[in-house]
Amino acid sequence: MSSYLELKNITKKYQSQKDTKIVLKNIELKIKENEFLTILGPSGCGKSTLLKIIAGFIQPDSGQIFKKEQEIKNPDIDRLMLFQEFEQLFPWQTVLDNVIFAIKALLKHKKIKLNKKHINAQALSYLKAVKLEAYKNYYPHQLSGGMKQRVALARTLAAEAEIMLMDEPFGSLDSQTRQELQQLLLEIWQNNKMTVIFVTHDIREAIFLSDKIVLMQNEPGEIIDIVKNKLKFPRQRTSLEFNQFLAELKNQLYAEPYKF
Ligand SMILES: Nc1ncnc2c1ncn2[C@@H]1O[C@H](COP(=O)(O)OP(=O)(O)OP(=O)(O)O)[C@@H](O)[C@H]1O
Image 1 (spheres, rainbow, N blue to C red):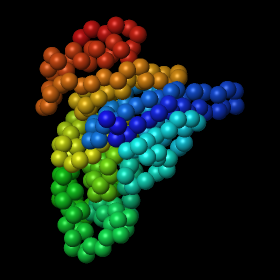
Image 2 (image 1 turned 60 degrees about the horizontal axis):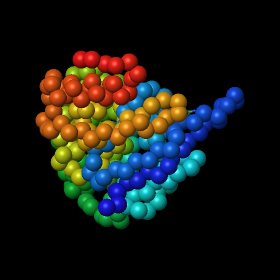
Image 3 (image 1 turned 180 degrees about the horizontal axis):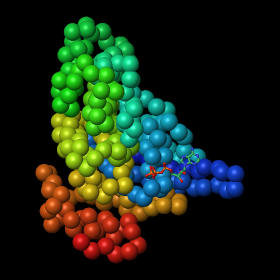
Image 4 (image 1 turned 180 degrees about the vertical axis):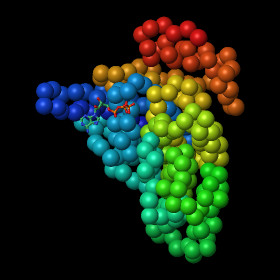
């Protein structure tokens, strides 16, 4: 069976004054529809670069990306990216208007007309999904980092992105908020049909969230393994299986044997 998304032999180099650096080398990856795939690897191994190539923001030096066997090269509304930085909302718009913006963009793209009341109701339902209805009239500067990330998540949901590209979206949050948002993201992913490609260097986060984990190494950024996550939901971070899997992944990622 053909894959939903397929990356074929992606290579990316960057030229500096001194030399040419191979950032991504021969990346081959197949992603199923509605899969939650995490790209895990050390800082600088090319995770963000790979995500931006999938988003169409930057072009690879060689290789191709196919979605349902059609080559994709440019950014499109089917693939939306969520970043680590909190400042990705429109600061001059309220929380509700930030979400309404995405709904209007989608309606325009689909050439559908909908009245204001319906658009508002839809926006509110997305805010409900991220548990922020009560903050609909707040402006981004009145929110915490975690709340801003939840609005950004609602806005991506409102745009009905088929593929959500998440670049360490919870990386700047404290550990409790981070765990809450991981749980929320899982619920949203389980309730909405979408494919998630999630970048992190946090192994626990990868285990908690994903179906499949792509392990990368540095210099050049290469895939060293693609591991299926066999842990059933709900996943317990303190369980024996969770920590055994953590040790296995650490052993693969780091040269030093890791015991837990
Ligand atoms: N525009 C650019 N020009 C030159 N080099 C770049 C550029 N963007 C990224 N790089 C280099 O490519 C390599 C991979 O960067 P990238 O941000 O993709 O890594 P990463 O795995 O996401 O890292 P981190 O986990 O620290 O965010 C790094 O060595 C970086 O310096």
